[in-house]
Image (cartoon, helix red, strand yellow):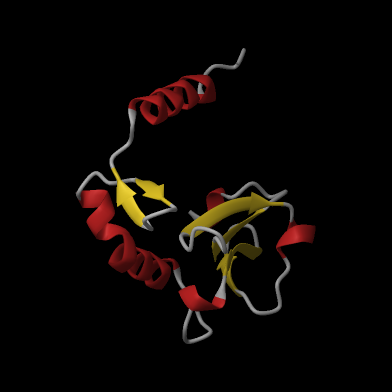
Length: 116
């Protein structure tokens, strides 16, 4: 995973301040620099290709395994229960609605369609 990040970008894991949920963003290196985040080093690319905000690396050190474990402990229940859509009002995960399913299908189709 660390080696698959485009060399022109860095992946950043943080928490959305509005939703309170973990979010991942693909950012140019000039934006990602955060003195408080822990960097995960790609041996192949010889650079930090993944930036993790402190709450996801409590010891100040992070690895793909530790980050995955932390995220799984938080998100396993909604994933396994099929509750992937987050309701801001109630601050809970709920099943996707028809319009959300349509959006996902359309996004998947356009992702692999070079003419989209």
